[in-house]
Image (cartoon, rainbow, N blue to C red; front, side, top):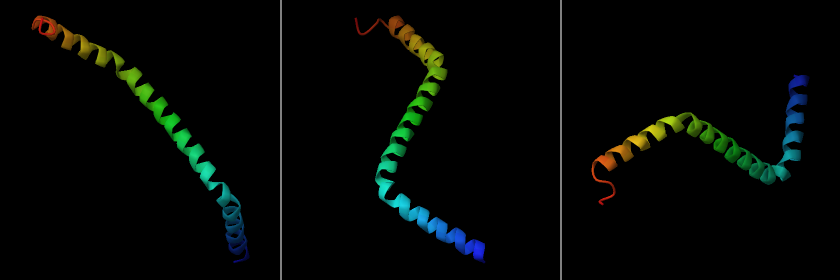
Length: 71
């Protein structure tokens, strides 16, 4: 029981110490999240770029076959 109580007290102390900087940590984690999302989206875009390029080429091919942009 003594070990559990000590751990609980340590956790409470740690929480009270971290509480004031929670706002700044929130902003930092938000920036980190945005950065990670950007990297992930960029990686996915890089993987699918040939597919998108192929689809775009296909679209323009049909556009040209249909007489261009209404010209």
